[in-house]
Image 1: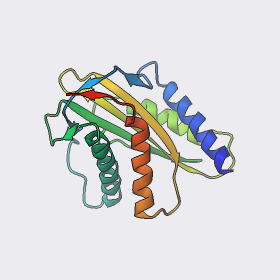
Image 2: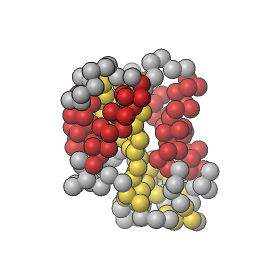
Image 3: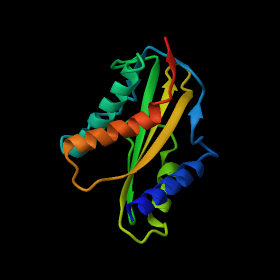
Image 4: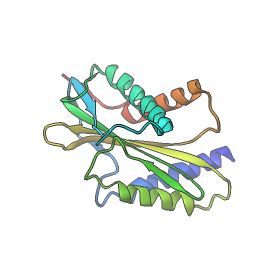
Length: 185
């Protein structure tokens, strides 16, 4: 059943992001990116104290992205980086879908991505209960605001993973998305 669920989610998320290609391409790869530094999208305001779970998710994702880009000699800065990294997280099950877009930025069409994810997660033929997460990462030129790289991956979420398992899975997802990105100084 697990491989069936995984296959369903892979197909579903391919459809999810392909369905949005008319307004926003699913995958973008402009080739080698010239950058030595990056920063994350700056959210409007800090997360409230009661949002501890979201803060933990953001810390895991940002740590994984920072490590992945550091391996490519691109260093994180607080602001003013050569490129800006934006990411969107969509989590769903057979009935509901939630979007975590704090670090995806404003004026970007997350609603269509969320609608398509919700449709794929809730209208599938898989009768088994599942929870899945999709991570989408954009690397944006900080001068022109052009998306230089967009990638995504989907994973079935584990029930009560250890902090180490959760971090390893986030690292693997980020590396799947950014593993083939080429940088030059």
